[in-house]
Image 1 (cartoon, rainbow, N blue to C red):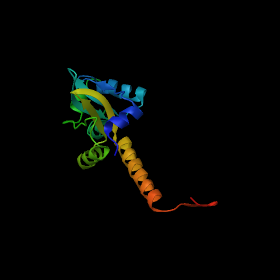
Image 2: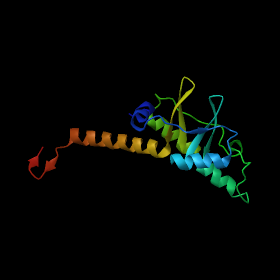
Image 3: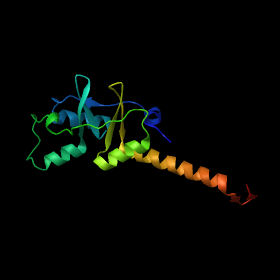
Image 4: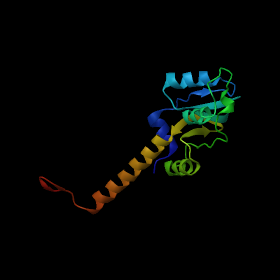
Length: 150
């Protein structure tokens, strides 16, 4: 079964962040430049929130226009749920599904070491399940090919 640490090795540990006092406009510009859907909000090296495209969209429904004085801290999601590198992908998928969020920071010794998205988590879980099914089939059944039995 895959663990979060395995995903970090594959996808890397690059995480983009903002402070609570970053303007929403600057945060959106960074997200656009880096082609990411969320920023981890850090204050004094500690995670205090997550600011995502979804947070922005939900907030902007009630606002006439984007003001330069709007700050990330007014739109970010709190509290932040996070994973440890040795947690299973299934555990991460369960909490993300139940709590309805798409971004999961990964902390080790209270230090941010990565950010995983629901797409990566679900994809990894699916690949793990597929591999298990293929392994089970290959050990139980004979494969038939154009050349005959294997």
